[in-house]
Length: 425
Image 1 (cartoon, helix red, strand yellow):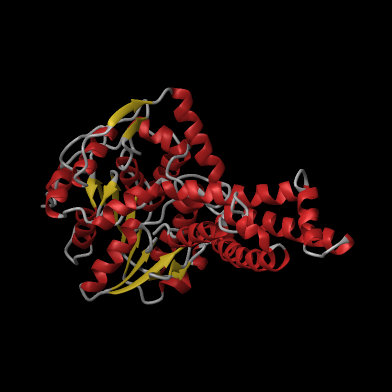
Image 2 (cartoon, helix red, strand yellow):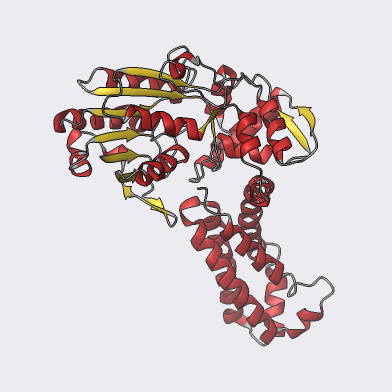
């Protein structure tokens, strides 16, 4: 079959694309980001899908559609209303117009029971929009999904598992973790010609766990001893979620945001009967860990996950603060160094100002996700330039006991480390 997968570079979508392609299907992967170097996809802007006509060129010759697109909450470039409801409602209308009968749509477990956020409310609205169409629709409502790959909540869990002391958030509901392989098998089942249609299926694992019990299982998988638990007070967890909201306005997509706080209270549990009546028997999380031993790469990822945001915060603040200091309290020191190197007057002032403004621009570029890569490259380049200019003008800085020239090199290495972990998936 020729199958279009919307959200084809995400955790679930990329696994579905790979599996269907390996089964001989012709798969069109579509993504809001257009894909990355490791996973190319046709770029689609769901926010621009204000009518069914938007989707028609993307669905030429397609026989089935799998919609895996989703966002946690509204932020610049992300609209829960469009991605979960209005934009995909027009996708469903386009499918009906082109007589693409089979549409498999990913929702979220529990949205039919409780909708505490715009995320779950828009998911439910999208479900209803599909159910109104004359299509052979299937709505899949997964719990938290864990597989070899990690993104969002599953990545956060691995990062938390690396901490020697586990911060336990208050008021978190139970989870029935479902394995990525079982989610993919379900999609494959419903793409069979004789598969039933007009079905709503909850995808959940066989056991219920608290959030910190899942972390404990992951630590055991990594072959690490149990972590000491620290129960966070409500104000501390609230600050964490607010910080995640703030970071999202810079183009980053942290899993810990106010929407996650509201959804975690509800938990993610469901009924296994939906999968069992289809002949699908989901594996448990311990079974997955037993069959897939954790490699050193898994432990590297877990250890780096929470270090990554710290690296980017430190680097952006480093460059912004050096720029502000150069224009403020460090002005006289900078002019003194220029004079020591033989640069005087206006030329010295312009050089200090140019360097300070460059630092400010680099710091802001690193902080803003769409320009972060360019900011890191610029930081590396200007660090080399500073080293060369400093060596020419004030060579004694190499022997300074505070090491202003020597410290350039670990800073450069840290920028290369930031480039290495920049991609999220």
